[in-house]
Structures are given as structure tokens and as C-alpha cells.
Image (cartoon, rainbow, N blue to C red; front, side, top):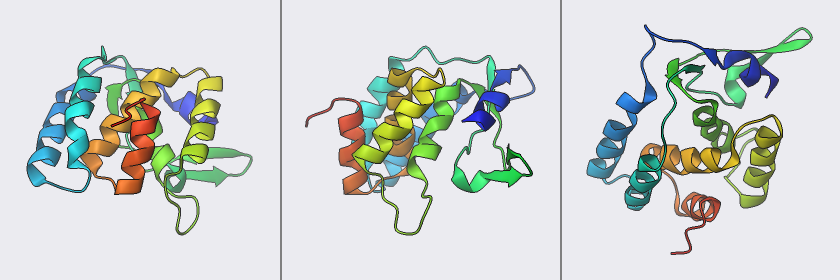
Length: 155
């Protein structure tokens, strides 16, 4: 989290805004009929409910494999920089494995969300972004159940 808090800074052009891309990514995922595409309608609703920020530089691929120890601190590598909001970066961290065989589980996901919320991020926005981003990236049935639970969808 320290790395993210150092990265998420005010910025402007020439960086692209996530809001110009997310709708297209949702369209592409829906038309591809990939695993988890049944989540796209709710992902669109959640996205429409957000007033998506555009003043903060986000990493774009913020997860365990892109955070490296450098002496007494950590550095983030392999950025896909865009303008948005810090909560946009959290789903990659929630979803990517630390060890082999990792699957998105409710208890681990809730613990990670709580840690980011304790660092000052908006929990509701993180939950929405997790659902939205995972929907267009594709998910297994078990992950879809975790995501639905995150946003209170009982269907």
C-alpha cells in the first residue's frame, strides 16, 4: 500500500483517462463471450454510478508481481499509467496471486479491501471497480461469486 500511496499523485495530460477506455473494454468483453461475460450488465450499471475521477495518476497494473523490494523500500514496475482514481488500481492487487494456486476468495479479498480502506481509499468504490475490472478481464465461476458478494448481488 505504501507504494500505491506514493504513486497516486495529481496529474494531467499527456496521460489518458480511464473513462475513455472502460466502456470500450466492457463492450469488447461482452461481444467476445468470454468467461464471466454475464457480469457485464451489472458492471455497466456500477460504472454508470461512478463519477470517475480524472486527476490522479494510477499505475494501471498494480499487483504483487509488479511491486519489488529495493533495499528498505518497495518500487512499482511495469506501469500502464492513466488518469483516474486510486480505487481503480486495487482490483489487480485483489485478483493476482501471491502464491501458486491462488484463487480469489471472499475472506482474503475482504482483508485486502480493509487494508486499503484503512490507508484512506473508498471501500465502496474499490468494490465497484473490482467488479467492473474483473468483469471485462474475465473470471471463473468461483471468482464471479466472490465479486457478486462484494457488491451485494444475490442473484
